[in-house]
Length: 232
Image (cartoon, rainbow, N blue to C red; front, top):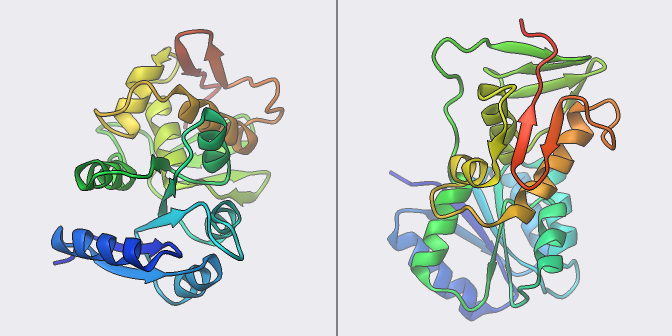
């Protein structure tokens, strides 16, 4: 039985070959593409659980491809790049990536990142309401859907897991480390830039005025707190 279907997108044949061998050995079903355009064609034909996407490719670059993938797919996305600045990480996360790994990397690190990206919180906790409201926004936890102004707002799986965890700990300040380890996994904790990007994305989808949030608030130097206005 497959552990999941992964699409490897990289213009270097040797990297595609090495990743295919390593991931297949771990029980993943692996497909590969050499350009962003080819990857988008593959995603129209098949459902993938995760995309490993190189940043620097000829034609459509990795960031543009990431944005296009995120518009239509809920697959987890890990960006592969030789750059390691915070600015590069934020650009990848802003484009819709779940994580970021710098070349060269070892197989154990890559496998850990894949497990973290595919990590999902339970749909509902015991005794948790299926639906709740934040002002004019309805959040259906069972269906993993958010509706604002009568229109569905698409959340990536990681965005939803982050929102769900904050809901489960509503009205309590949750530290950066606790949030990262709960949503991404125990190997995370220092990647505060991940939270900044994902929290900003969530605010755009659940707050009437994202620049002046009423529900998803920052506790400076500590973490974040979700304030529930009413619960149904």
